[in-house]
Amino acid sequence: MGTTPMTPASSGTSGGASGGTGASGAGSATTIGVAPPKEQPEFLRQDSVLLEPGEYQLEFGLAYTLSNSTNTISLQQGGAVFAGDIVRTHRLIISTIDIRLGITPDWQGSVILPFGWSSGQLVFAGADEYSSTGGIGDISVSLTRLLQEGDMESATIMANFSCSAPTGQSNFASSIAVPGASLGQGFWTATAGLTMVRVIDPLVLFGGFGYQHRFDTEIAPNVQLSPGVLGYYRFGVGYAINSKITLNGSFNGSYLTEIHINNRRSAGSAREPLQLRLAMTIANREPTSPKTRKARTVEPYLTIGLTDVAPDAQFGIGWSY
Image (cartoon, rainbow, N blue to C red; front, side, top):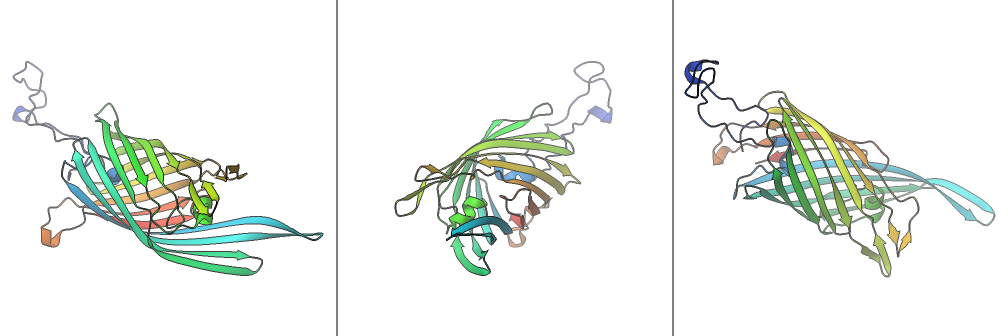
């Protein structure tokens, strides 16, 4: 769990010769020792099988998210028509604790416990309204299954399964309009997807896709909300500058189908958030004592929203132990 995955395994030759005669015949090289097992890159630790059975990893994260949206509405009163803009600003500060556990050589589990504070501002017709809330967010549980171990010629393929519970305070106006902008979503979710990783030193190419079912919920007495389903995809690349630092970037996209309220379609409610994520992963590969234990990885990152229905910006940092 502590070796650099982007350095290909090397083998020695008898007497240090590269083309000498070995025991297997003329012109062949004698391999000494066994190549170390291939591991997944540290920056993909959240959806890769990295841990041995019974081994655990803790990750602490802190992030700030800013979302702005403007919608124009018109009101008819008497014989006059009034038009105006509704401006929503939402700020979210969230801290997460991610507990990962190696179950078997091919299975890894994770529990994410978020908590934080959110603030919203609504401006219309010269008046503004503020709201804020704090507490726990939506708790999620996930499992990762290694389907195929990659080698020099093929990619590693993993299946990911997760579900989240609506344990956090939700603001439906924000969570429906801009996914990820609220402390809680307000409904249960179940997600399944695939992740593929291809190591071509010093590059790591990765991508994936999946489906998320968002369950119906009651937002008011006799008012049933169907938040729609979500399909997502991503692709990116990581580049190892040296044995400790990896730069990585990814393009993340998703499509959410239209919402329904009491089985009535809300016209124009389909959304397509697109985001660009840039990060630097710093790995600590020096042994430490329990009294002076250092973070295994430190990862600052920046996510930029590319469409109106994606959060404008998010920046944060994570420490794994």
